[in-house]
Image 1 (tube, chains in turn yellow, purple):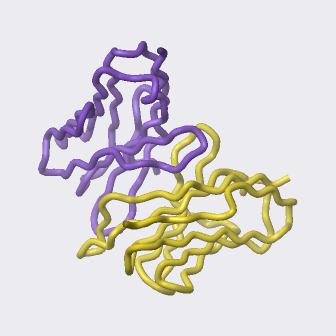
Image 2: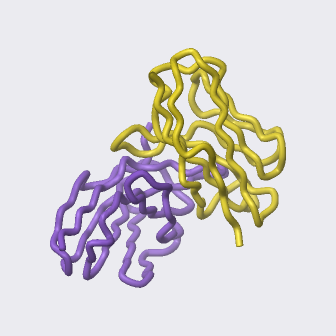
Length: 116
Length: 111
């Protein structure tokens, strides 16, 4: 069966410090991978998605970046965190559907990031 | 811009009652999905309905889709305290490979 891991679970970082959040998927190959951010009490904002190694689509301009160095690994990074980067970060995967579509997405447990 | 908008934003009911949540969207879709999120956790997929389907059931869940009105509803029957969570609709359009989520409905089921 497929599983998705995210770490760390919680993170407290000072403004201006770097960030690296990691997400890995097991039990599937060539998944679509997604990074979302969720502000308190709000819906999910899609940040990045990837349909293959080295293929990253950015949804919103920001000081975050994403990389996919391996098929089942997705990393969210920042060189210098801002206060506004605080939030709940969720990684998700889905099977790639022919034609570039997506069906069900499976979410990791999330990382709670607080920037002070 | 937000594709899906849930209504109501918050809902409080007694255990055993039915809960209905609605979702409206703006553009044509391939499918619409409902997810559940317990506080501080990741989302869990509940049900997917395709654009050519009108109704779908899964256990105590019933989802309807009206593409002419660009709306969907999620009905939870005989609710339980364990159903307390936030519920989100999400739509998939075109060949984008991505879902657009609404802001969610927070459901509280009182024992």
